[in-house]
Amino acid sequence: MTFEEKKERLKEIYKAFDREAVEFKKSAMCKPGCAYCCIHFGSVDITTLEGLIIRDRVNSFAKPLKKRIKKKIAQNKKLREKGKVAQCPFLKEDKTCRIYDIRPFSCRQLYSLRECDGRGPTVHRQAVNLAEKTVQRLQRLDSTGYSGHISFIIHLLEKQEFRDFYLAGGFNPAQIMGFGKTHDIIINGKGI
Image 1: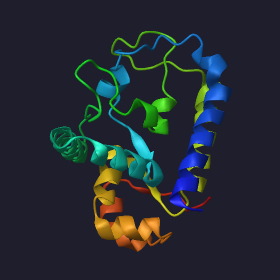
Image 2: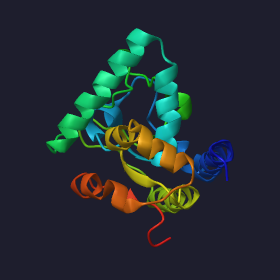
Image 3: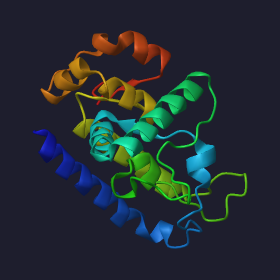
Image 4: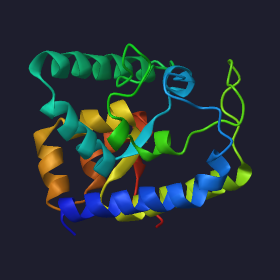
């Protein structure tokens, strides 16, 4: 499957989740500008496939914005390496998402039945189960890739050799073993 075909399949998986979760999200308190999860959750995990799409978007930004976003991603990575919660590097000043239309699944699945107010989101148990199944579908789609924190996956994708190997369908976990172990990177194809 080509990268373009995988991108289309990814959109189908997102749409399927949205259709199945629509009843759960009807009573969500979330609205543009809330940003609790973007600021305090700090655990935006993505697949390599999602990371490539995000990386391509960042590289399409005007030079000053691209530089600012890459700096935020690097800062995010450093904070995460220290075990700290890091605000999403794509959160704009008005507390909306700069990449909302291509946001990863870990963001798409989030909603809350009550205002978070420092407590975090409250979701239906069935929606959590549905999200877990969707993550498995994403990992099967990206079976030659990895999953992990957004800043760690983007860091890997910034390496030309890794990116080219991945895009060519290559799969060699030993290639990232050191980084993967210290940064809790998951091998998508393992056990699927």
